[in-house]
Image 1 (cartoon, rainbow, N blue to C red):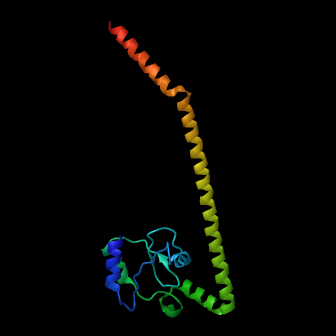
Image 2 (cartoon, one colour):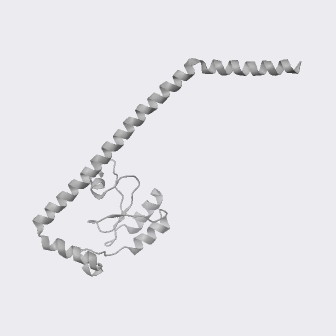
Image 3 (cartoon, rainbow, N blue to C red):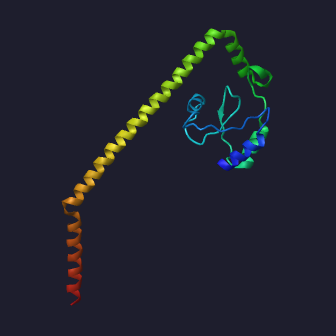
Length: 170
């Protein structure tokens, strides 16, 4: 996918209406990636910079280019005429709240999101710890079974079977 993405970035370089870019979420772009909800790599986001959504289309050059060609103004406060009735109503409600109330709501929602991420991370860490513990127990138990004479038992069993077969042939 990377070569196709690089080719698409080159095609849209200098565009005043469409930005095609990549961000390294493992280094300097980590904060940006966290703020827009990137959880795995590669992730493609599309839409308004204030409301990026997950891209669910194809990942080959032609699919990416077709999507990029469809981009343009989207529903939002600057383009309310592009919104459906539900979004228009929501924009009006948010506008009527005032700056202070909007900031408080943004902070609350961001804290909820951070808590979800922290809870998920703790859950995954717990799973990893449990997996490692169970894996170690399994390995120890398997080693104990081997050390209890399983190999020798199999050897004796095979030898006895071979011996009885060769006796019956006489």
